[in-house]
Length: 135
Image (cartoon, rainbow, N blue to C red; front, side, top):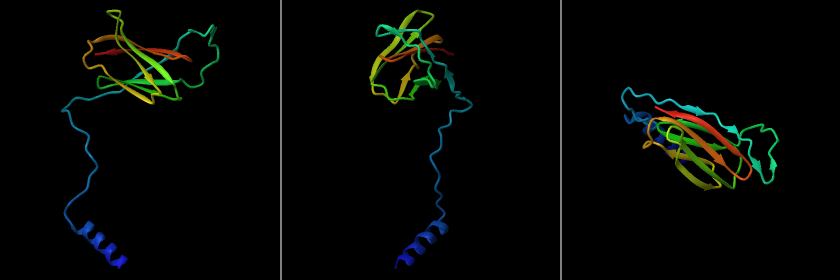
């Protein structure tokens, strides 16, 4: 009985005209989206009365810009981190939120004006910053 069921499934799969495809990525005409890495650098910030002098073998986080979104991926577990985005042209903080135990953060910056920006990641154990441009 199991062989007959298997044979029926195989025949239905190969004989039917239906085709199964994975989900297509939506097309936006000739628009191409490129991923822009945002290099994050460790700040020389005073942590709890001492300066963090241990060299970082791997950064606590990586960041990149894709389709008017800033993505921040954390490489280590973090209890709490504040992510700020600063418009360098206007010297104004446009985004600042504290996240608890994040793995990946996606920040929509589609409403931001073109120009130079800075991202800051501040935690009790590290402080990182990087710069990027919105065109």
